[in-house]
Length: 384
Image (cartoon, rainbow, N blue to C red; front, side, top):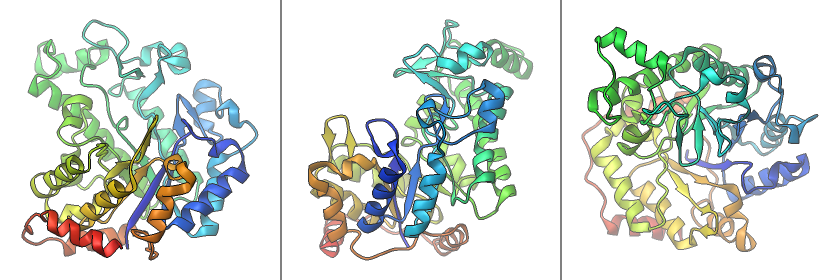
């Protein structure tokens, strides 16, 4: 068993334009050796499936580009033909828009806006945010996720660095400030990085996740809750994502830390730090890092990709998820051909929820010594 995943966004990609394109892409991925897909279903404040929740709340059933279709259902049907698991990806999470001043969501529901210390709409790296601490916002996101979990034949659901998340500069809206006053009888600190204030807000998101986890398992205990935060502790200090607590509390089944580094040695350093200093051995079967293979004009080299995969295996990690699909198609499918010939040459089954639990139990043993470069080199030799 291995986790061999790939993210399928709408940004910089044409695969969602027709069912034929979806079918070709999924058949290609199956032939390459992948066994799980993460298709985007919530992005830029719109869904890639007909949503009763969106229609009821905002009067918009689906992204207008896909009117009359159900791209998620199309992807699931094509994946079934190839024996692949599907875990819908709620890419935007609590973000409302990108460089759109809140977009349609906050235009229709301005009271849902997150606020920074100055009272401005919370914006970070171009993304504008809904208030992840506000119950109506939480209920909306929860309802979207449960709608998908209920209606579609899927392996699980996925959040990322925006779910559950909020930039740590947020939390200064009237609702959250009053909640803090009611709890501590004082105003929140001006410094958003003050430890107690930061952890208090992170704990609210952790409790949201805990309830969401229970809700998803209530639909089907075999559904996986997959999350892809940034690396710890950066994800905590910058986006209030206490990912180590999530995995310790067992409110996440699979975690894919976004180790998006363009230097192979730095990638290996972060993996080894994560494996041998941040997480216990029994948690490792649940961790399959995210690897950046394309962003803008950047595309990872084939040797660097194989080194990253070899590092994962040498560190006893069960797999990886690649960001994103189009990187596999560049330069006449170069990366896909390399994976097909080496790292993914032999087929591997995607683990079930029960198998992940069994692997975690089996890993409850003293820590092993971190592998050196020679161990990673040995794994590279096995890939060839």
